[in-house]
Image (cartoon, rainbow, N blue to C red; front, top):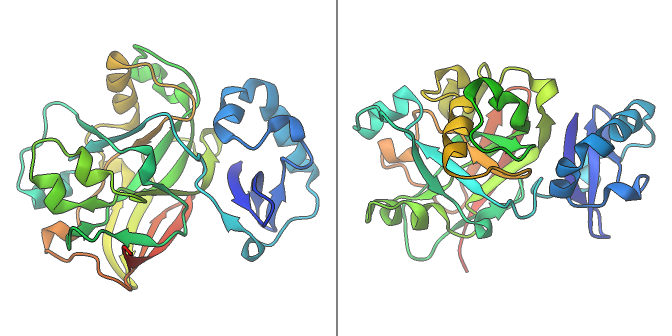
Length: 283
């Protein structure tokens, strides 16, 4: 199932993406509400209801007649791992980490999958990072790697936008990773049962039609399961938390090719879809 949050003039709605368009679900099933985090937390109660609704179908809304929103409006946690593809580590000139390197992005960074990408007034060094995003579906603490898969609700396409001079001026990356609108993800959540093993998906960043990043999630240094297991040793992970799982080689920092106004940034992941935004200068 591809579960989306969208609007068409009357506030946020939840829908199911099909080959014919969007099946609006929250209008027909008001009990599910319009908050995907709450829906994920109550999936045992509503999941079968939504699957039956998808099978029964109905009148689909054309995708061009609506605006996709970020699948989760305000995730409780936005966690991101650094240096997690061998080719990105090599181009960064850094050794392969023996331990996972984590930072956070804050909820002000959340953006819809088609929103403009804001280039901040205080920097000319904004960069793109194509990433697989995992959405937590269960509350877990001290979960094993073997059991981590069961904690994932689904997957999205993400762009871990980074303001490099702000990121590099201190050992802590949080400020450079948390500028407004710098965590677009979507275009919807593809549920984990539809994806299966997430470590086999082609991933690409395409800037103005030029493919800059082109890899596969099988090249992750620390798997999605390793990431969840490690994080859960420190904190309880909750339904609706999201994890940016790392970016492959080809980022702009490697060649000092920073994003500029008018650039179009498209991030694609096989089976999950694509997100795309045009860069604009901050007002």
